[in-house]
Length: 267
Image (cartoon, rainbow, N blue to C red; front, side):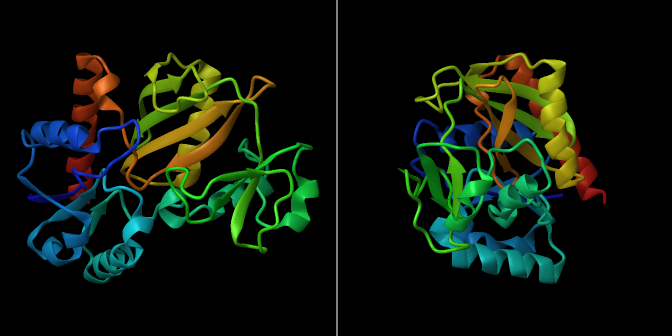
């Protein structure tokens, strides 16, 4: 079954090489599927000629929001298979989930979207404020007195965390973890050996999202209390940092992804 692989090979990601990752991944997936690459702006027009579309490193969709919404609507209308499936409840649908998960007590960085609700957050001198449709820290600011309009932005306490850590899953199967020992250098990652408690934390969000198939990255920070708190659940086009992994882990990931795609295409 031919796949249309959506990527922006030239996207200038800070600290990451999107193009290199997708050249590697497509070279390996060709062992399992016939596929062709296209830019996200061309996906809607080209997808009728393929059995499925796999959305990978295409950059924040806010840079081409109108085209993405048109692609999404066309895929849903035609029944075209899209991987990750378009039913994701996390970043795929915006940042509302951080508010929803805060409200029901999940271990996330506490989040509100109205300055009038600051009393619901832990006491802090500085707040992180970012657009609800933001990505890649676009529009992120820090202030002691948020003054945004209600419902416009996410407001979180600025946390003096020890480090960030990311857990990578294919379907509901954990693949590997990476962490950034220096909080100031988010994308200088090294392998991380998760504890059983760490994995239980990450799996809780994978279960919440209810995606039967797909790649997901659970980003968390280690709070001063020692607990992990969710930063984001990336279920649209998570960068995988495959170049930082030893060859056996790369091989295992590719095989897991190929198996997931085969099962997805069979549904």
